[in-house]
Length: 490
Image 1 (cartoon, rainbow, N blue to C red):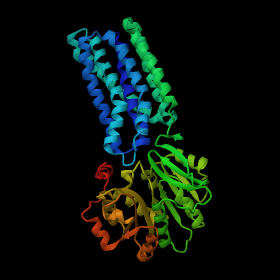
Image 2 (image 1 turned 60 degrees about the vertical axis):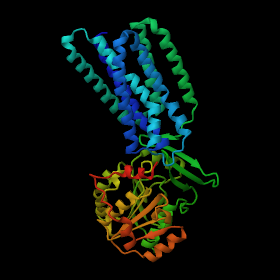
Image 3 (image 1 turned 180 degrees about the vertical axis):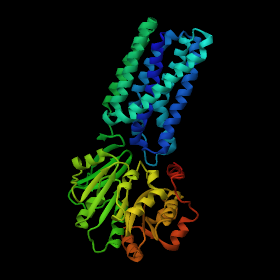
């Protein structure tokens, strides 16, 4: 095999493995969400496939003439790539994503991506075998091809993450990779060993069949962005009701005709805190961490006339779908800055907000860098002296995240509390908890009255200290949010 072709082949196969690895996050997101543990499963499974493929490919190259098997191997890798879409969707649709946990995440990743990584990684040692004409140059040959393969992996990573995912639907990218590899496999077989032509043609037919099956599957996404699989669902009980799904999380509910209708319990807790903090319903300046369905900016517009909201939303597609399908009208009273909130908050003026509301999620977890004492320091800088910080988080017994976040808030604010159904605090249930913090005193009695009417309890003062116990402060150096959430046993 000519050196140039050998280099191109290991480059292509390594690049395609990393393209599939990056796309795995988007394919898995509607079923298990996106978290550190999702990416851990993807990286671990793909690395296992690469290791197994390198080993098995080398063993096979020593037993069979690589000229005979390289073409079919590349084509088989393409076939397996094509089947990632129907496999993940079929298994994901048949399994509940509620509290998906590590087992489901790893299982879906193995089912969809282990074999493509294994087969494509087996090509590298086969190519090395064909290039080893002189034992005195073994090190140089192996090193050169390994370096080229690594460079291909780097190119595949950057091109996919920075270009392809932002411009082309995931399924289209997967199909392109699969059919491209099958075409390369056919060409190599015709050139190196025509005896296996029937084999690669069978693989090609199977690939077309697999793509046809995948094409008939309905995508769970209305819009697939660089960050989320976005879906809007109409409420069958309310013609004006819309539920916004981001990946596997039912994120927001919007009534197109009534912005004061708050369906989710934690959103009603937000409103309870506002009623106590701003009883005259005066105009307030609010900063929102995360847009979602823009429920609270709409609510402030209706209930606190003259209020101005600035929303830090990471995904332009979320804003677009709110405008196109959820009736959002932005203007001087609702402004949206697109970008990561940890970066965007740096540009907010000191003492510019009466209210900061945090409702940002990646699957069930608040992005870790929006939970730390360093981020809360930025929130405190932006808030006015009597401002209020309210945030929504999800946790499960033993509530390690809730307790640690409360401890972290206590490092910055004089008055801190939590609102949730009673089952959350006695260790019998998990779900949403609303935390609030301020340097002003709250009318706890009034907040308890409002919360009780909504079926919640309020924890402050000594009871809060007992709840927090010896929980640590969350810092940029230590924020194991995803791992804490996994301790519910899922």
